[in-house]
Length: 409
Image (cartoon, rainbow, N blue to C red; front, side, top):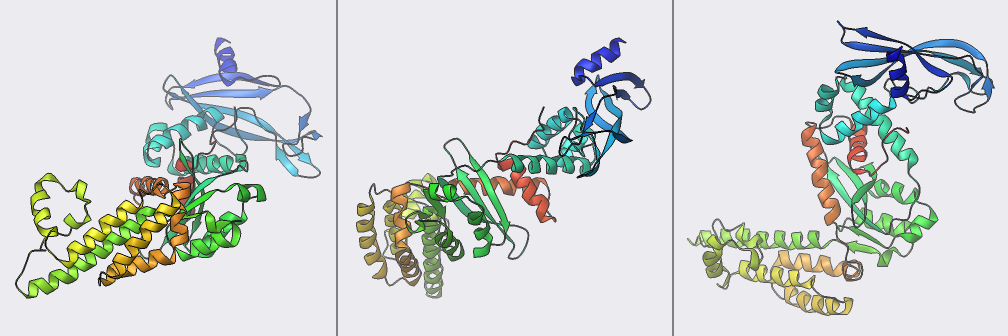
């Protein structure tokens, strides 16, 4: 009797549900808690209309362990027949519909899976991979269903390469002061890949977007221009990708010049690739003397590097007008440099200048979503890759979607 009362309180059962028996199965290391009910009118789980019992279904649920023993809840659950929804198993208070686990067990499983791999969670919880995956999928479905349309002023758009070849995901993240959360994931990196995000927003949400950071992907730009009101002043091309382009240009100049000098017997640029990627203030002390000797020589690579350093200072301007004037001066030097890789980057920046200058209004970069991409790469390593795209997207939302994953108590 004391055991029955204890589990009645542990499960939080109220009428018409009650614990009928508690059985210890020592060999199976299980405790079976049998739950019954008093006769009462039942309602359809879908429409809540009052129904009479049509049949019964024997069900089992895994609950939190009791003193290191696996605890199983069993019950003969009534089945009602609704004229509108057909035969329905009535809802039980300790578990969600279709789940084989109690709400409390699912909460524990979700917390464990947020901290470790799914295989590690299976070992800790004593469940199969399929069972753990089912809990995760229900959690994400539950979280997405609970999401309310909210205004997202600052967004980042980026691509994430997966697997081998040209396989990509388009990811949209909301940037907030305390966190960055994934709001949208779609396959591919075409215009249509991003269209679905904009089309899913309400007019109020669209009007509330203040800035969208992205690289110079034309597909993303066209999608944003087509769907976001006033997008021309809201698109922010990410400084990181532009500086990365200049680093690449410097390296191309170095490789070309190194081949020419090496043919003349001069190895001054040998093993210097990494040095030219540093900013002047970041050159390691052990390389500082050699680098200073090299960059002061009138080499093409030195001139390309200096133009890269001047371009880095462009992002320190504090107003749009100062930035525009600074860029004009830098652009003039870059075009007159006679360094084709540098001139190519300069022309690219000139063609996208309107969306580059918006940075000095919104001060938004793709840094937050780049951090998310690194964390997503960690998921891939932890899972040893994903063969199923749907499960990959589920994992992204599970860990980085900022969703309310837990079952209602």
